[in-house]
Each structure stands twice: as C-alpha cells, then as structure tokens.
Length: 343
Image (cartoon, rainbow, N blue to C red; front, side, top):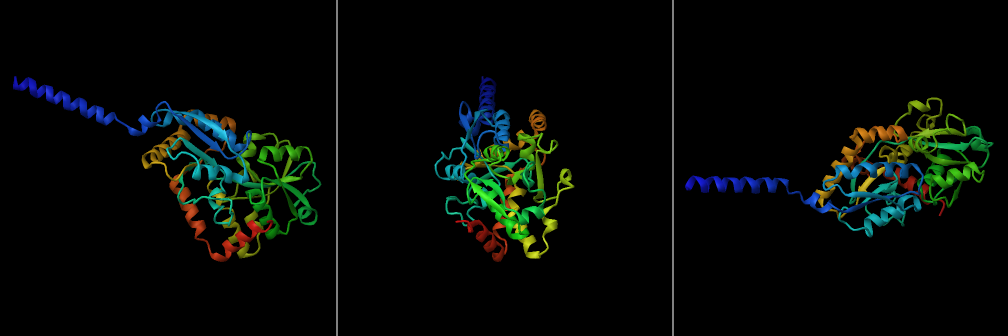
C-alpha cells in the first residue's frame, strides 16, 4: 500500500512539474489576442512594405501566436506614432511601433512636439543599417552637386522638423547647396509622386533599401539621379556616387555629419512602449530576432528587396542612442540650430 501511495505521489508531483514547466504567462497573455504594428509612415512606402512583411511572420514566433495587423500612423516624420506609443497606447505589449530612425533623436534636437523619452522606450531591434541619398528626378535641370550649389532645388518633406528637412538644411550648411524644402508630403510615397509630376525636383533623404523595395526600376532605368549619399558606411552599389563624408573638408563638419547621420546606423526601428512588462519585452525581442532569422522571411525579404540582412539588437540601438546624446555640446548645439532654423 505504501508503495502504491508513493508511486501516486510521485506521479502527481511529476504532473505538477510538467504543468508548471509548460505554464507561460507571456503565451497565456498573447494567445487569441491581436497585436497592432504601428507603422509611422503612409501606405506603400518602404516602412510599410517592411511592416507588412514582418506582420506575416512575427506572430508565429511570439509565445501564444497572436495575430499581427498593420496600422499606418503617418505624421511629423514619425513623431505622431511615437507620441502615441509613449503616451496613449496600452502598455501591455499589444502595440509595437515601426519608427523612422530619427525618432530617438527628436527630443535631443529640441523638437517640442516630441513628447517622449527615447531612453525609456523598449527598443526591440532593426533589420539593418540604412544608407541615405539625395536624389533628383531624371528630368530635373539639376545634373550635379555644382548645379545644386548655383540653382535652387526643391525637395519634399513631411514637416520642417522631419528628417528630410533636417538633412536638406545640413547639406546646405556643409556643402553650400541651395535645397529649398517644400513641406506637406506625409511620406515618400507622396513625395515620389510629386517628383514624377514635376512638383518638386527631388528628395533629400531616400533610403537605398526603400528605393529597391518600392521603386526597383528607378536606378537601372535612370529615372532619378543620385547626387550624393551618406550613412555609417560606404555602400558598394553606389561606388560612382559622391560619399558625403569624403566631401567634407572641415573636421567640425565631419563630426557634425557623424552625429546627424547616427540614426542611419539604427535602421528601421521596432519598439514597445515604456510601460510594457519586462517578460513581454524580452519575448518580443526574441520573436523579432527569430523572425529576421526565419528562412521563409529571409526569402521574402530578398524577393521584396527589404535589405533585412544585418539585424541590430535592442541593446545595440540603445547604445547608439546613448553615444549620440553624449556628443560634444557644440555639435549638439549646431544640430539643434539646423533643426530649428526654419521655424
């Protein structure tokens, strides 16, 4: 009898142990739920294409396998979406942001509309770094950087404090260009259409990966001209195009550009709000990393030319943000002046 009781107790303990091991509060939370992926740009752009691709795979890697849907929330160069995630969205892990790389630096630049603390946000990761380009439409009379120094070149932007507007003023300041920023284009989709219609000459902040994903024929068919490019590293596919860091003659200008282009080292940013429980943040970081490594997603990324080939972790993103906020005060002052100069 004692042996029977002992075996029964052992079996009971084993069953309890298995049940405990299988218990996963994160999976329990996400099971049957819908997660919104808030894309901070308009429909049809590179961020939107990436967001919709990730949404098709992310749920299978999140414990509980929630449904992931995309919501576009364009405005003010990503500030609208970031403010929403920080101040309004439920802090339970059901709202993920896909933000422009400049979003963490808006408060640093003195943008009053940016009502969030980037160091408090839970950065999840990004698919790769970015390369930015100043481009003009092929039919534009602006054929070279020298032309852009002597002739006014109209370029589109969402707002005066958006990344394209800031980079246009930066390029004017460092290289003596005459870029005139025309605001009111919610995203690159609208600005590209304006370029095609001749409303503006070009765009000062086209990401190489976005161009391949949304307008893959533009470069080979020479529908646009790339005037120069910038970013953390030289790009092998743009070997014949001037690289901004090589053109800067003054040491102060090079330091300024390093700080200004720091966002490009981050890429397209996935993030959770500041109040999301730590276990759900950790689970979502793993899920995003697993998505980027998923063979099916990688095949989809290659097909769509998303450029998701060098993922950054949340911690790597946090470190870049920390270093940039620690830049020399004169550099930050100059950046702030460029950011505020059109107000």
